Length: 119
Image 1 (tube, rainbow, N blue to C red):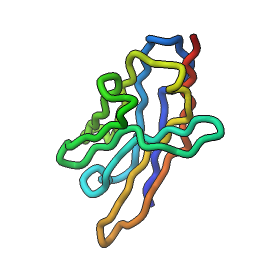
Image 2: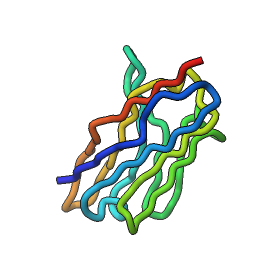
Image 3: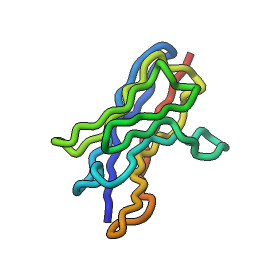
Image 4: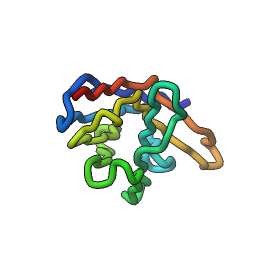
């Protein structure tokens, strides 16, 4: 029902920046909470940031002041600007759409994009 495709991952050194993108089909931004989640090796998938259709954002404490989530409705694209990267940011990052409309319910995930930060 909802397809999410991430891009923009890669390898950077500490202090560097990356911008992740997530394109989707349809109008999910208007009815779903969009977000980014990170899963480090051997750990659970954790919330990084979310954004609602009205533009309200949340961030994990570990990324506040360094990461910025945004969306371009015209391009059906969600972004995560990642600055001042740390080695502990290394993870697979997943784009998610969490939908609770009567006609569209469920949690939808992209395939993930690897971010590796080295010292």
